[in-house]
Amino acid sequence: MQAFANCRFVVVDVETTGTSHGRGDRVTEVAAVVVDEGAITEGFQTLVNPGRPIPWRVTALTGISDAMVADAPRFEEIADDLARVLAERTFVAHNAPFDWGFLGMEFARAGLPGALHGMPLCTVRLARRLLAHLPRRNLDSVALHYGVPIENRHRALGDARATALILRGLLHDLERQGVESMEALQEWMARRVYVRKRRTAMPRWADDRGLGEGA
Image (cartoon, rainbow, N blue to C red):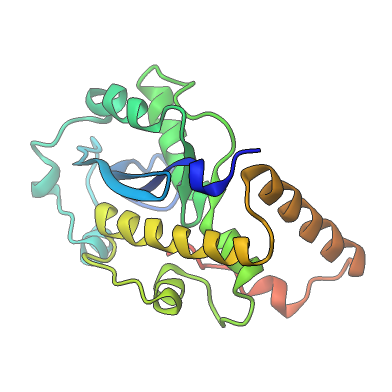
C-alpha cells in the first residue's frame, strides 16, 4: 500500500478566460507545485497566451490582462514541460474537475491527449467529507481553517501553493482517522458516498453547500 508519506503529488491551479472550456475558454496561467514525500517544491509556472481576448471581469478578478499575456507562450509551447512535471504524480487541485477539464482540453489541442492520467484528487471533495462543520469549503475558508496564507489570490502559483499546504493538512486529518494510504483513501471515499446515498434519495442542505466552492 502507498502510504501518504511516500506519495508523489502535483498540485495544480489554472487561471482562464472564463468558466467553460467547452465553449472556447482557454488557459491564461498555469502552476504546478510538487509535493514529494511531504516536501513542497515549485514545479512549474507560466502565463499562457490564450489566443483570445481576456474579458474585463476576469482581468478584474485575476489581474491578468491581454497585455500581460501578449508575449507569453502558447499552451502548445509549454505542454511538454508541464507534462513532464505531471508525469507519475497524483494530480491534485481545489475543485479538480475544473483544472483537469481545462488542462485536458489544452493538452488535446497540443497533441498530447494522454498527458493527464489516473484519477485527480480534489481537495474540495476531501474538505466536504472532513470539514463538514465549515459553512463553506472554498479555498479561502479551508485555508483559514488550516492557518494557510494565500499570496496573490486568484493567481495560479499563489493558489497552488496554498492548496499544497491544505493538502498536507487534509492528509494529516485523514491519518488521524486511520486512513493512511491512497488505497485506503479510495475505499474511504467510496464508502462515505455509498452510505450517504443509502440514507436518502432526496438532496439535503448539507449536500448543496458545496456549490460554488471551488474558487
